[in-house]
Image (cartoon, rainbow, N blue to C red):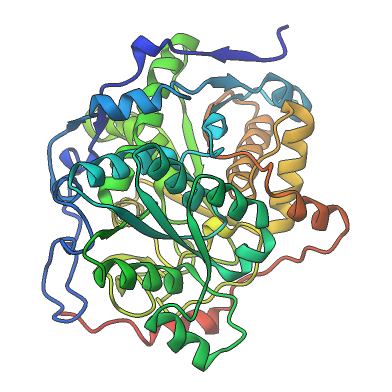
Length: 451
């Protein structure tokens, strides 16, 4: 038996359009609200260029991918689909396990799929600089990569705990020309306000967003760029699922369950939405499992409510699964999963019963990552390892009931810059952390009051 089978598309098969799930939803996703008035609003034009605002709102089923974007995509796309036969054998499972390997991109994750698109549209609009936040550094490195390709400068506010945990992610961003600052910082009013209250703050994505948004709002040559959550970001990521559909046809199978890790929702949506289209339009019985951290359980323990997207109330208010915008996460190594909220579309799909969320503690997650690495040879980012944990549990469940199922998951990024996390795991220094229910209740007291 061949140990591993790869299904690779040719460059000619690179998708020409992104899929917009809003065209097929049987319900309306609640609108964004203005942070000051509480009235329905668009994405603020001072922060985003017109093309991205239009993509945020469009109900067209397919959005054409500009040829300059496809040309950059060809540096690493189409990405391979791999059947994990060695993992199947080690687990002694009748399940067939496939993974879409997004770690082959230059920054090592799925994030450039939208970073390249956002940089292109911003450059077309005459923007000179993009500013953003990043947790583990996957998104910041992707935007630095994209801005460099299109001749733009890039300013990144990196959550302080990740800035210190993952110094080589910072170096990667700087190699592509980005200016990286640990957040909260003294550079912005939002950062100074946080440090005045808590000088030792480890930071959060909500705080870093506030800093990045403030810079974009106060500089005419600068726009803000977000790596997850918003509709247009999830749209750009669907190139993953569009490729995977073709590759699953090459494999002669269709998935029974589709799995991805979730922090803001972009890599999960990127793989899942093109397959969810079959369930929405044809009644296909595919399950969709979203794996999050017990330290940041926005889907499994949060509430579905309108909340601010950032700590300083500068970004629009969105209805989403949330732990409250004042949420400050524990210093777990899965920095990309530490956002307080979930993408509005993903949240609505969860609340309408289309998505099954699960949460895992980091010790079980790293156990799964090590097992996968020893079986398949690829070391996963801690974020991706949450999806692997869910995959292994599904495969074991298939073994126990004696039923075959086809499992497809998004291997959203490699862990080559996460060796400190693995070192801590092997040294027995990692601890599980479950976000306390009382802290959730406390954070939710500050939700905005909207009609």
